[in-house]
Length: 169
Image (spheres, rainbow, N blue to C red):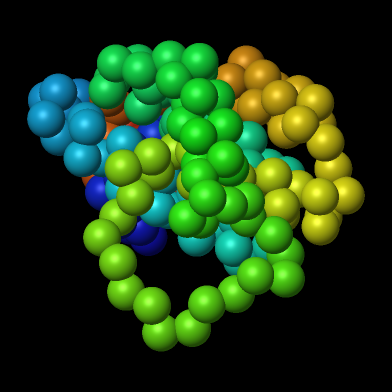
């Protein structure tokens, strides 16, 4: 059975797939494709976060955001400053659980990561876990599956495939 993915994966994920008995077909992508794939990975992880896997997915989102900082050339301090500026902005104020707007269209925010971090903070408080929990989970996944550093792009996995050994039996 072949499952198509066409997505960015951590650099040791293909090895984990192989150890589980499947074959992963991957390729290394260009810098331009990597930037695009990193953003698509952020969308994927955010969707999974919204579907209820809060702690693990927030750790994945944080990992993608950390890599994006490197790729796009800004620091954690830049994000902290943007969070502070957004919170102090008299036009918008802070994100609060009770504030909700319907049918409002706007251009994407210039400080996208700051907005994501603020939303994650609210969700974290609602779910009852801490920033330390997220960081521990992120580090565990980093140790287990690696980082998004190499631009490894999973095209598909295949299970129940015949190997030379299988055909000799």
